[in-house]
Length: 168
Image (cartoon, rainbow, N blue to C red; front, side, top):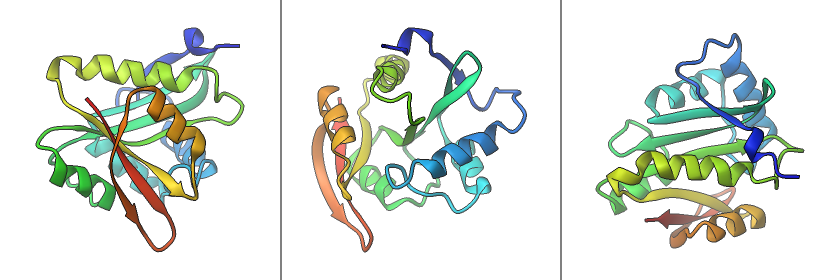
């Protein structure tokens, strides 16, 4: 069953929902290592404050995920973000996208990415992200490939490795 037609996409920064950031933080932590762990709720708030696009998505008032994107020239210290900062003059970096367990593989991720693509279409800038290759996230690699993302680099860290992806 496809749920994407039931999904509401809302701006985190404009939300008045109490404890929204705490809920998103817990959702992030439940989805590691697919997304990077955050050491505190304040770290998530800092990411949201730096972001150009910070959206959460829900179905019938149930929060089922979120996406945080950053533009070039932010103060973000991520080495993955730095890779794209050195590669591109302008870009939109998808720092993290989380879809709640049980809601995956139902078209929600594709629906959210299409929303992001439409948002920046007029700017004609690449969308960039990284995906774990150790541990390998085959589902995410396949998903991004199906959307037209191309590999532009790789990096190995002590605890994991990633491939860098870009879509025009």
